[in-house]
Length: 326
Ligand code: SAM
Ligand code: DTB
Ligand code: SF4
Image 1 (cartoon, rainbow, N blue to C red):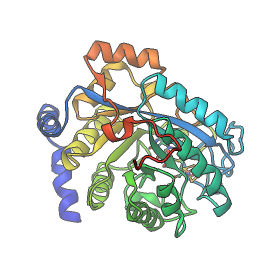
Image 2 (cartoon, helix red, strand yellow; image 1 turned 30 degrees about the vertical axis):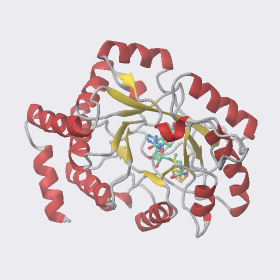
Image 3 (cartoon, helix red, strand yellow; image 1 turned 180 degrees about the vertical axis):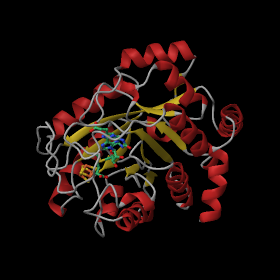
């Protein structure tokens, strides 16, 4: 592992133009360089979480201004998913502020997954740690992706989260994979980690076998009341370098330019796409904080000559409850 970390540190240290050139070569070998995948988020259960993740507005342990909301009804979820689809999203990700779902939570959540899948969208859920058997129930409902982030390097994790461990997160990732669900797994940059931590974090992601199909890289949104509210901002060029290294070490993964776009000028987002990001969260809200609206993103795509990636053929067909075996 330490040899791999050193190799990634060498990539990080390249002259910026050389690093971006390498990332572009890798990106163009595997993807249409001008296509960007669009995922829309919805917080289906907000706030009141037992965990103490230092970045999160939804922890019951941090004095943030957030108002908690219980699990949403299915009609509201379907309305939001339909609206996201009409605006061009191909994947819909439902997030719940839980340490992990209780068994009684799974019935309403699997109903949401079935209903969103039936609209012809790819489905993603982020519900926290999964207990034995839960991933299979999610898979059976038609869950395509499970989002569960490693968030940072193992060496830095203990500075950020104290209520669950890195290994517990790895176990949940294994359960999701074992049930046949694709992984959406990445993390947050700008939590006071060192460059070596960033290199180690990317080594941990790339070592998941195979690497996650989707890798969200979030720039920390500094939320008043959280322990990380005053951490110094990460240099934006270092953020771009991290995207480029992620692209090089996970050549076939979608790398998502995730939280933090609302605070980024267009030119910085353009550099992230140049470095190999090819997915975004699309829609005016992330979970509890704002995101650029669809109009702003359409204008940015127009300016950069980017186009949204169409939904995968096998997902495009809306499903009916009728038997499709004939
Ligand atoms: N409770 C579940 C969990 O922890 O996996 C799911 C929801 S959690 C909010 C999903 C992810 O959002 C976190 O793992 C983290 O990467 C990201 N996130 C949360 N707050 C953030 C913030 N303030 N800035 C950037 N990313 C954040
Ligand atoms: C991920 O990596 N980023 C998303 C999604 N997975 C669930 C969440 C970002 C949250 C940003 C802060 C907020 O809106 O609360
Ligand atoms: Fe936030 Fe998820 Fe941590 Fe709960 S487990 S505090 S929702 S990041």
